Image (cartoon, rainbow, N blue to C red; front, top):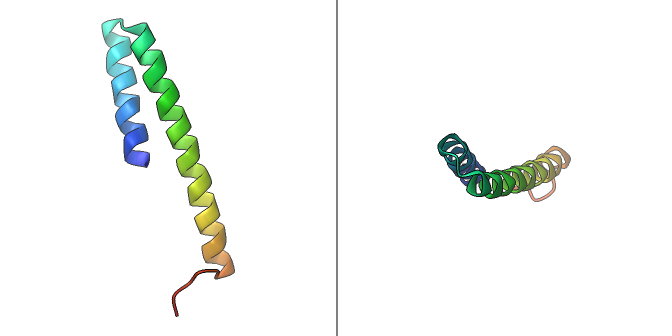
Length: 57
């Protein structure tokens, strides 16, 4: 998921550099959403690992 966020970030940067502001804005928005979803999932899994829930013995 983080990989997709980085891909959309690169698309947004390239599109912005070439002047495609609409495409850049859309790609940047998608990158932000995917990044925050990644962070949320990461924090949930980190919390579960700290608490030992779902750990394989």
